[in-house]
Length: 618
Ligand code: ATP
Image 1 (cartoon, protein in one colour):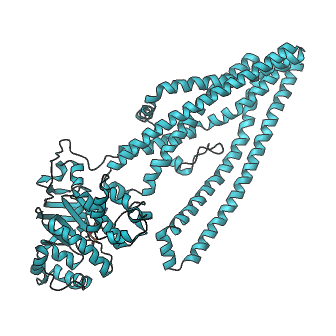
Image 2: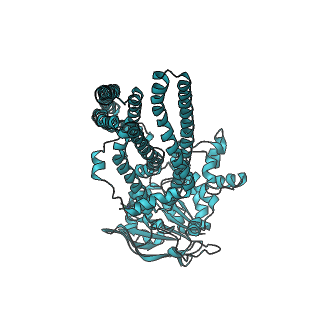
C-alpha cells in the first residue's frame, strides 16, 4: 500500500516504489483523463476558482506595502483605512472562493471514485473462480478500497496542489519583480535556505514513519490472526496464549520506541521549520536594508515588507512542488494497479450467441472431458457420463480425486480444457450463463451463510418468497423444528459466516435455501466432516425425498446417500474407475469395495441393513 500523501515526508519514495516505477505512457494518461471527461465543466470551474483564490490570497501581501508606504509612513489615515479594508475584503473573497473550490473538488473526486468503484465491483463480480482462488483476498479488497480512495486523494489534493502552487509561485514571482527586481533576486536566493533544512528533517522523519508503519502492519497481522474466531481456536487448542502474548509484547514495545522517535523527529522538524521561517524574513530585512541604505535609495520600507510577506507565501508551494515528482510516480503507480485489474478479462463470459431456453430439465452429459487448473497437472482425464431427467448420480472416490472439480464444470465455475459438458443437450459454453446458474443449485461442502438472520440468508435464493414458502422449505429441509425453538424464529442471527450454528444446522439451512431456489438440477457436495448420527440422519431425511424426485448429482461419503442414487461413478485419479449400482460394485473387489470397507460402511452403521438400493430407487 502506498504511504499516505501527508504533509510530512511524502517527498520520498520507498525502496519498493523506486523499484516498481510505473511506465507512464500516452495511453495511460489518456485513460486517466477519460475518467475526468464527464466532469469537464465542473473541472473548468475548479480551475477558475483555483486561479482566483491563488491570486487573491497574494494580494494582501502587496497591499501590506501600500499600508506601510502610503498609510503609515505618509501618515495618511484615509489611505491606511482604505488599504486595510481592501485587504480584509480580498482575504474574505479569497476564502469564500476557496470554500467553493474545495466543495467542487470533493464533489468531482467523490463522483469519479463512485464511478470507478461501481465499475470495478461489477468487473470483479464477472471474474471467474480462478481469479478469486489465485489472488489474495486482501489484495482484491485493497484495490477496491485504498487504491480507489487514493484516486480521490490525487484529485482533491495532488492535482489541485500542483495547479494552485504553480499559480501561487508564478504570481508571487511576477509581483516580486514588478515591485523591485533587485529585492526579488535577493528573495529567490533566500528560498533554498528555507527549503533544504526542512526537507532533510522531513526525510529523517519519513524513514522512521516507514519503520513504524511496518511495525503497525505487523501488530495488525498478529491481532487479525490471533483474535479471529478460528485463530483463537488454534491458540487455545495448542495452549499458545503465553507465546502469542510474548510475541505481541515484543512488537508492541518496538512500536513504542519508534513512536517516541517519530514524535521527537517531528519536534526537530518543527524547530527547523520555525527557525527558518523566522530567519528568512530577517535576512531579507538585512539585505534589503543594506541595499536601501547604501545602494538604492528609491527602495521603500513598504517594498521590503511586501517581499517578506510574499516570501512567506512562497515557502509552502516550493516545498510541495518539490514533492510533485514523487506524488506523480505514486499516483501513476496507483492508476496502473487499478487498470491492471480492469484489464483482466473475465475468463468465463456469456457467448455472443448464447441461447436461453424457456425451461430446463436438468439433464447433464460429460463428453470426454479433460480439465486442469495448472497445465502441469491434469485433474480430470476423459470423463464421460450421462445424467437423465429425474435420475440421481452419486460420485464417490478418494479425497483429492477430482469430484468437486468435476461438478464445478457444470455451472461453469471453470471451463473444460477439452471435451464438453452439456446441459439439456446444449454445450454449457453456449448457454446463457444466468440461465445455467439459475437452474443449478449447489449445496456445497462448506456452507457459507452471510452474517444476518436465517430469513435474510433464505431470501438470498428467492427475494420474493412468502412466509409460508419459507416455512415449507425449512420444514422440508428438516430445520424448522430448530428454528421454531429459537426465540426470534426465522429472524435469528446466524453470526459471522454462520458460526453461531452447528455444521449440521448450516447444511440444512443451505438445503432450505436451495429448495427455495428450486433448480432443475441439484448438486449436493456432502460434507466429509463427521456429523453426529442424529444430525446426519436429519440431513439424510431432508435430501432423500429430493433425490428421489429430482435430477441430481451427489458427491457422497455416506452409504445411505450412495444407496439412494441410480448410478454410482467411482472417480480415482481423475478417471471414472468403476460405474454401476452398489450391488454391482460392492463385490467387484475394486476401488469401490475398498472405499466401502474403509469409509462408507463405518460412516453409516446406524443405517438399517434392509434399506437397499432398490428401495431407494422406488
Ligand atoms: P475431497 O473429497 O477431499 O473434497 P475432491 O475429490 O473433491 O476431494 P477436488 O477438490 O476436485 O477433489 O480436487 C482435485 C485436485 O485438484 C486436488 O489435488 C486439489 O489439490 C486440486 N485443486 C482443487 N482446487 C484447485 C484450485 N482452485 N486450483 C488448483 N488446484 C486445485
